[in-house]
Image 1 (cartoon, rainbow, N blue to C red):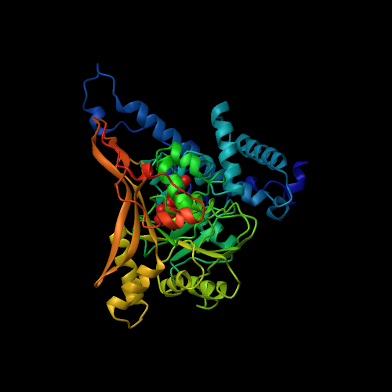
Image 2: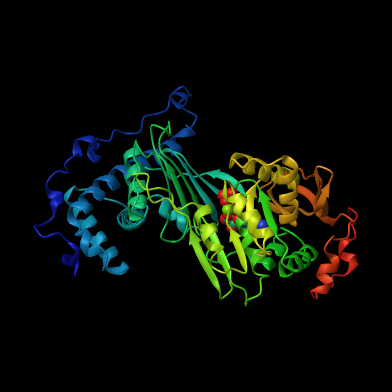
Length: 481
Ligand SMILES: Nc1ncnc2c1ncn2[C@@H]1O[C@H](COP(=O)(O)OP(=O)(O)OP(=O)(O)O)[C@@H](O)[C@H]1O
Ligand SMILES: [Mg+2]
C-alpha cells in the first residue's frame, strides 16, 4: 500500500538531503548549556531553570528531527498521488517513511514523541504545519503570527502567546506560499502582502519581509461553522432579549442598519445574527472582501470582491459589485464592510428602494460612525456641501448598532442609536439602549448592565404598523442593582 504514494527509485533519505549542511545533525547536539543565572547558584540549590531548559532543548531537537524528516518525506512522497490518498493511508505512509528514516539515523524517540512527530509531519505535508493545531482548536478565534518565533492567539477576547513556533523564517514563508499559491496568488518582495481565504473559509492575511521588518506577519480570522445566533449572543451577554426584540422589529420593518465597531469587536457576527430576522421570501445580495457571512435564507446571492492580480489587472472592487448588485433586483443588500468609495452607492441604495440594507463600518461610537461616513464621501472625491452630505446620510441610515470588545475581552453591543433626521446642520440621533458600565471586579472583569435610555423609538409607530407592537416597557431604563 505504501508504495502507492512513494516516488519510484527507493528511499531518498539514504542520500543526504541537499541542504543538510544547514541542519545540525542530531547526534551533534550538545548537552544542555546551564544558564548563567543557574550556574551562579550554590551547588546545593537545585537549578530552577533546568527543567525549562531541558524542555526547550527537547523542542529544539524535535524541531531539527522534524525538519530533516520533512525534507526526506518530500523527497520520498509522490506528491501528485497525495490528492487521491485517504487520510488513513497517508498517515500510515508518513509513519512508515518516518520510521525508516529514524531507524536509519539511529534516532530513538519515546512513544509520545513519535506520535506527536507523526502528526506534525502529517500537518506539514497536508496542511499548514505548526498552525494546524491552532486552526483545529475550537476556542481560538484569531491566530496572529509575528515572525517565526512568536505566535499569538485570541481566546475569549484575550490575546495569549502560544508555545507554537516555526522553525525559521524560511519555514514560515513556505507555509504562506502554500496558502497563497493555492488561491492563485503570489507573495514576494514585489507583492509583499496578500489576502486569501483558507480552504475551511478562514480569512487570511500575510505580509512578508522586507516590509514586515522582523519576519512575516500573518493574521487569520478563523471561520466558525456554527455562527453565533441571536440566542447565543443573548446567552453570552452580548445584548438582552429586549434589545433582540427591538432589533427584530428594526430588521423586519426594513430599517437601514449600520453595525459600527473596532477591529475584531464582533461586527460581522452581529451582522450575521441580524440577518436571521430577514424574511425567507426576500432576495438578499451580499458583498464582501472575504465571504464570511452565512445567511440562513434560501434566496441569497453572494459576491466576493477581488484585488488586482500580479499584473495589476482584474480588480473587482466592492463598488463594482455594489453597482452590479443594483441591477440584480435585490430586496436587500448586505455589504460586509464599507470603507471606501462604495459608500456613495451604499447610501444611494439605502435611499432608493433597497431599504432594509445593512453594512458595517470601523468606528468607536454612533457619532464617530457618522463622521466616518462623511470622511469616506469626501475621500471618494464627491464635491458636495457638508450639509447635503449629512442630509444624505440622515435620510439613508436609520440605525447604528455599536459593537465593542471591552477591556476584559467581553464583546457587547454597547449602544443602539437611531438617526432621526437633521437639526440645522447637525444629524440628530437618539440612543435607545446602552451598556452601562459601573466598575471593575478585583480580577478586572467589567461590572455593568444593559439598559434602555427611556427614549421611545422614533420608529415605534412603524413597528406597530408592521405588526411589531413592542411593549412600552422595553424602553424603560433599568436602575443599577
Ligand atoms: N458576543 C460575542 N461573544 C463571544 N465571541 C464573539 C462575540 N462576537 C463575536 N465573537 C467572536 O469574535 C471574533 C471576531 O468577531 P467578528 O469577526 O464578528 O469581528 P469583526 O468586528 O467583524 O472583526 P474585523 O474587524 O476583523 O472584521 C469571532 O471569532 C467571533 O466568533
Ligand atoms: Mg468583520
